[in-house]
Image (cartoon, rainbow, N blue to C red; front, side):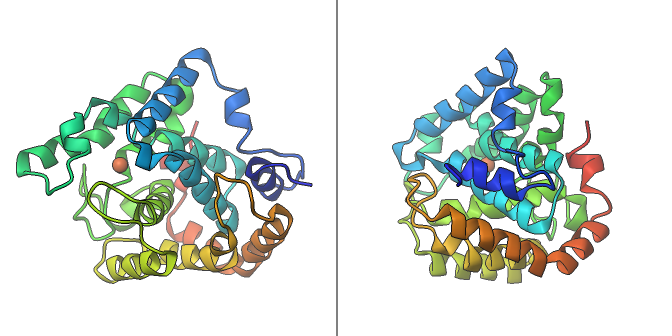
Length: 264
Ligand SMILES: [Fe+2]
């Protein structure tokens, strides 16, 4: 019986059924790391409308990683990246972060500094090294028009591409100062359009669409715990089997996400 999604993902994440991938980071956290995670929570709680965003993002990212068949170390990095990706927003003023209208060019420069700020905040923590590429590159675009480095295609670390897809889906389906919450089909349509425009990795988006159909779309609230974890676990494992050839191809072509994003 799975008590929480941590147990579900843990049980799905490796050959040993008792691996609780998402619990492990908390257990293994040092004092300074705990402070960083608390800081990430504080950033999230500056805006009541983004409550639960990090938790949902961590869930979707790890579930996508499980569906792709990533190893445990990468799943732990995804979990931590889900929480810490926007920690650099701690340095962005409220007047910019919560501005209901369009940002000026200068305000955009400040807003777009949050990935680098986040990386700088987390860099002193040696154990967070695998998470740094996620924090720095979660706003890059597949066609090279993103920031901060304008990386394109497979130059963008695989784990950053995964967290980006999860981030966009959760942002679209949540209410924000500048937009209402989209229904899941509307969010998927926006993501499909962005993928057509060349902004997203088409393979990761396709995998996410499968995951949504089999698992996420059946859930009524990741943070409310009122979903059937047993049937989701079965769906997730079936999905991983169904996607295995596509996943192998993805990981083969990305030539080792481990070197850039999940190395020690
Ligand atoms: Fe961000």
